[in-house]
Length: 126
Length: 173
View 1 (cartoon, one colour):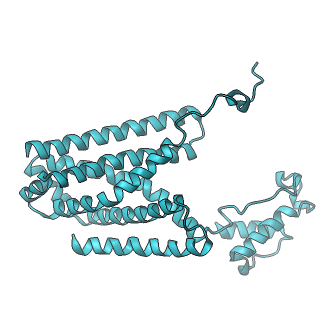
View 2 (view 1 turned 90 degrees about the vertical axis):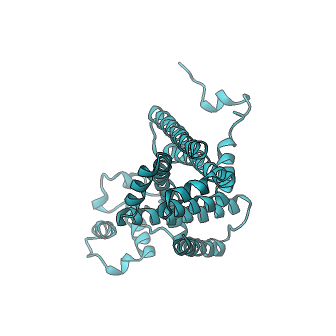
View 3 (view 1 turned 135 degrees about the vertical axis):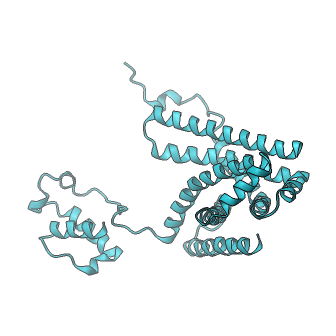
């Protein structure tokens, strides 16, 4: 039988070292996404109306490709951090919570990789 | 729902009919508290709340209407979750662009249909709203804008700002 309270167990162990990491990266990615959103919208406007070759030529320019790519990668990171908070707020069962958070993380990793493959195909192969 | 709560508490209070004036927030709140504190009324017998009558009660979501700042706060979270669907669609769109001209034209014809156009502009608005409120979160983190007047002013600026930004995007894209 364990009579120690959770507080007694952690007392004296020091911090977990990564407590502010999640909060901080949420802010860093948010700040980076603000200016990058301009290129995302230009890309979307172009790809929804312009001819194929024009969109490819626009995306082939390094600044444009890097901006759109960064937006997608940072958005995936930002969204994974955000959904983690939402899950932690509303899912009470500990096991389900951990599984849900990691499913979300893996789903965003998959999305980021899919976007990267697509952008590499566009930029490298034309 | 609010009417139901109103009627329920009117019944608790000596079976009086529901007064339409109680629709206002403050009255409903008072009514709610009255209902809790009337622990010696026969209709409260056996009620859990009646067993500990002096517990402080916070306004419940069904009784209390969220202020504008509260609505914006929950909207920030909801747009955040919905934008994830937009992100999935964006990756699908990028894959279509990378798959050659035929897939590109197919994607364009899909996104030219009006239901998807509506979803697209909903995505843009949600993106700008989330961005505007996110900027305010950054201001809060930097220690600005905690006064009540600032909160309300910023709420209006955010809503107007995201609308204006969406309009500018609509007319320039």
